[in-house]
Image 1 (cartoon, helix red, strand yellow):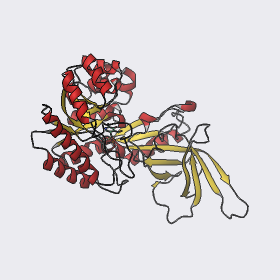
Image 2: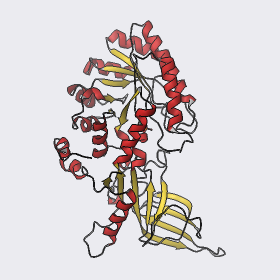
Image 3: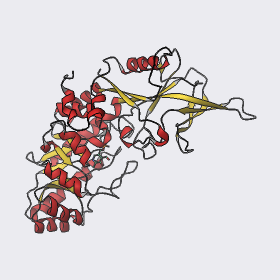
Image 4: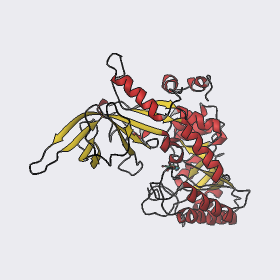
Length: 420
Ligand code: PLP
């Protein structure tokens, strides 16, 4: 459970914002917490908080994911990708569990330092760094960082020559995955000139990093990327570098959306690491979604409904308007970053994920802003719902809130924590 003094860890930097979500709301199941919140919202006698969308987060999920990681990937140290979900209690939990952190900006680094995490547990995993961010890293002794181009080497030479560098390499485009290769990573024919330049500048390259992509269905991709890393290790040796760290990036699934389990990926990756790198080479990874996806459930209310009857069709179709959308927690839906699972909660009923015994209607789900592009589901089959009912979205812990805006004045959903 959580110590009472946790608040102190945060009071140094962002005060009120952090303090708000530091405590566990409850220790009931996620469904119990949801129902309790909704009862409070529906209670007309109570001055409730206007009925905005909200998250319920289960810290127990984060802890169990970590246990799983340690069991199946004992050699690979997880550096949690803060970008996927920087909720203070998530970060605090992982800091207590002893993970490292992948940070991509000054703010992310500061959030971790505020938890009294040693700077050696941070990798500044952004290849293109604003100078002030680099200065901040230097000031706080965050040494480990990635790069993938010449300009960055000159910048680091000038601003932070003592940094420990990981050369990020490009990975192949994998079908179906979110591809990072077009923006990041040195191509394999540019690694040698980069290593030579770094040598000439007297910079300290200690290893190789890559990010193979998110939701990769082909386990072969992990071996291929690792083979490339191995070849850069060999190239570096010829130039007088003795590399000792591989960063295998993120993209590890928390769900079956890519059609492959974490365990399968992990066993192939473990084998490949052991085949290619001796035990004295340190291996780290940058998992984000693996830890956070399943921990957060988003609860949205149907704030309005339009029934559309078309002449000739016996059944109407339904348009449901909910209080979160594509400018909010669903911002990354279009990029394929999130794959929520929908349930419904009707008045005086239990949360339901199966309506196979009921009549269903063609339905669409729209967000609360004025934009006609603000839809979450264009065409889906749902039982008949009413204004005031709730749509519950599971697996909403990664790339939801941090990517969202408050367009049209729609607030970001609050988070209520529990631990199961
Ligand atoms: N590392 C890097 C460099 C990334 O860009 C990302 C995601 O964009 C991650 C790690 C985390 O990826 P995931 O949440 O899929 O594990």
